[in-house]
Picture (tube, rainbow, N blue to C red):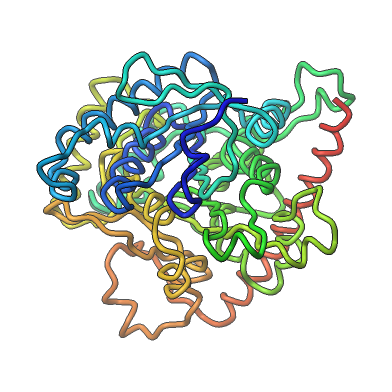
Length: 464
């Protein structure tokens, strides 16, 4: 094991972030934005360790090269960085503080999740550099994780449902049709075998594929990474608890999810179901009814009962990227071009959610990753769904988004307040106390089932 550049740096001057599905789309945009925001807001002696995950070594190599090129370009062209240092500014001093490594993980293969977790916790990572702009890293260890952003996922769509497309536009209008579409063609029945190609008795056991890729694989990964995310009482005095940042969508509503089809195997809107369930879990994670299950989820398997009383667990947040033009939705090149044009048009018409580019869509999750803990605590950020928002002039901010059954922050607001808020669904119904109680009860049921599934599949995995 070789010494790492960050070994001699005070912990408060280092930041370790992991992003899943980071080889393209929003995940790559998150990587770019993390680099930019970190370099322009943190001390000039601080180091960023960015760990994008992909599903293959070749994709990891391309991702590292792409993010290094972005860091090099930003360090060279950023006026903000030059103004912070002055005439002596050298871009290489900046790039030397950005370290990009990668691990491979397939979220629908639980042995892959186990291997990636073991490598991060007990193993080493290598990331060589062919030039002097970046440090060459040989078998370095990762001491902790400050933020994990769970971005990877699949849509489960086959393309456009043309009749529904025109119906959406003519009945909802262009803004609502492109913000809350029902014209994405999808079918139920997407299945995966998380222990396929193993000698386990459960090798042929199935799970909802979209549910597994978007949520449950991340859930298993998060639990296995708890040793890197939790803090001892003494550590928490200098560095904040690790942050688990779940990525949702602007679209899901109550009807998208059913306890009777928890894994969305029969539900044709499997993507929306997985994101609705993500909303429920993240928003209710800090509520009293869910604590028995959340405590188990955020405890390392090796923690003793005494240690659990003194260890500071990671915090959980949720964000969505707004409406972004990425290849997760299957469109040909011609349609993709015009889809992007329409998104820009809708932004100009006044939608706050049409970020269009992956870099813009990365704002909310990156803000949650880097913001000071005191500011997040003061905003009760763990009880809010944060969206990447943008105005006609391209000015961005993290904006509270409404969650059906919870509102914006769990508070029942009068119509005089809610009717003035932009970015609502046209059919949104104001929160009532009854609905809020029902939402919290649903959260407890969902956490209970997720923990049951986790323990069941971990028991199967231990047989491999």
